[in-house]
Length: 464
Image 1 (cartoon, one colour):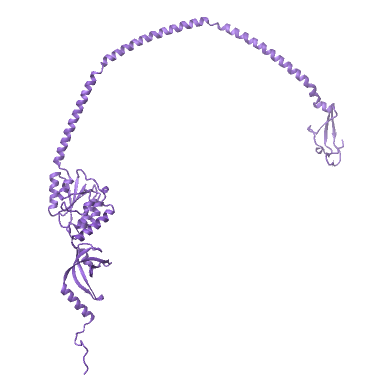
Image 2 (cartoon, rainbow, N blue to C red; image 1 turned 180 degrees about the vertical axis):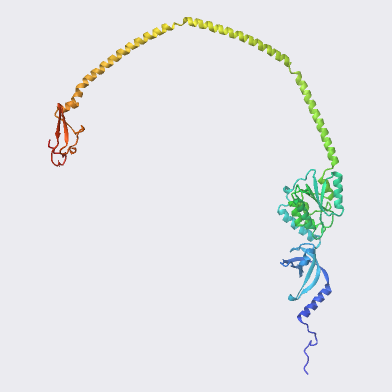
């Protein structure tokens, strides 16, 4: 008989049966657990599921967050953040691995929270969201105050009570959750919603915003360290007061707000002045102004009185001036009469010394006659000299005259129209010509054959 192989009596399992057995063992042994580790290998898929790993110095655990659990996580997972994950341990048979199905995430203590807050603070500060130049001054007396806080609790009652005591104003409350899931989104939406109100709408647009909540742990105040809340506060066109927690608590919204109040009650005190103190101050200012005006009026009156003593009697000055004017007028009239008389007498003396006009005219006529005789003599001498010169030139002119040329044997040839013929080529056989001599004229008819030319001079043979 052949011996049976060792382990022949061990049970046999299918792969799926073994995977199911392992899964039951893991889920039954551990159930719901809390695991602390640093998030790594974070991947978000289009399906909405999130896959990641949790690691520490010695090991790494695969984890998954189903789409249905994402809204209830409590925080947005990020690589490098140390968290405490709550869920159940299970297996993934297709890859023979085990993984943690995460249902909730928490920051692993204040150290992790503070590191995350500090990283976000540096990021937003580098973008300039915390610059002092961005901060707006608060209105002196706001007409409407908007408050973003929880509608329940002591915070809203303290703010409203302090506003009523100091300076009653119209208040609009936008109720929000101040901690837990969705708190940050509600706070950011409230700030944006107040800014979106039209200035002349049915709901009045606030002149000032207060974002407030009471004290709490660092985890309780995390909504006010959310990036969306900080950006909404920095982008608010309405001046904003941050009043989150107690005086020692600091959140990122405090850096982005236009003013930080140590407590919600202090925020109400920063928002409005004390009405009674303001009225008392106005009364004091009014009294000081009245006293100053009275003092100035009294000083001006005394100055006028002192100046009045140095002012002469104006009616007397005017009367004296009028008298001087009348005297000057009378003296001027007399001076004018005397001046006219003096001028008339001087004219009479001058007229006596002047010659009679007829005498002047006779003298001028005699002088003119003398000049005329002299001019006639000069003209006669000039004409005689010109006649002598012409007489000397006459023989020369006769020697070169037209008649003298004809007398020397020359003749002037003309055509039938009387125009001079100056070229032999212009004479043709049978043409009538006129010959003018010194003692008369003769008419001839040209005859002859063709012309003959020599080398130098054209010659026309003509029979007369």
